[in-house]
Amino acid sequence: MTAVPEFLPLAVTSIQALVASLVPWMRAATFQINRTSNLTGILTATATWNPGSVADGDVVTVTIAVANSALGDICSASLTTLTTATLTIHAHVQAAGTVQVQLENNTGSPVNLASGTLRVMVVQF
Image (cartoon, rainbow, N blue to C red; front, side):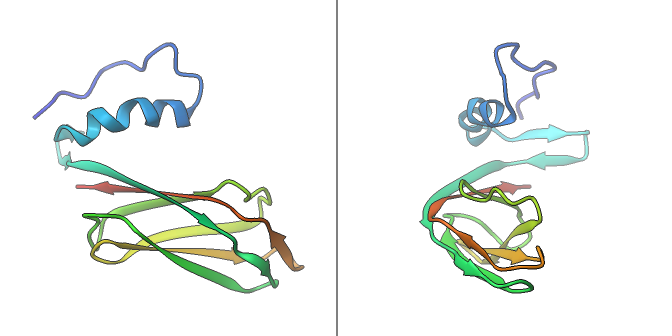
């Protein structure tokens, strides 16, 4: 088991940079959080996604392969063209190795999103 660093690198200027700097290290080790849970890995995947026009109240979905992901793993997703704060993006492991991402529009009007990069991160315990 590897000890979690007690500090953050001072050169890190964003959460994205922090995650990028830690992902290789986290993939190589199992370490403990709060002395109760073993974090065994972080899995990532990217794909191009064009959700197109999403009517108010509608949900659009896409699946993305994330090797070694399992039911119950914690998921997070982002889309580079998602700029409207009132759109909601969710992710969950739908089946072993497959993450489903859902984009929900509750803005009160249709939203047309351009194609962008979908990023998915899966945390394993």
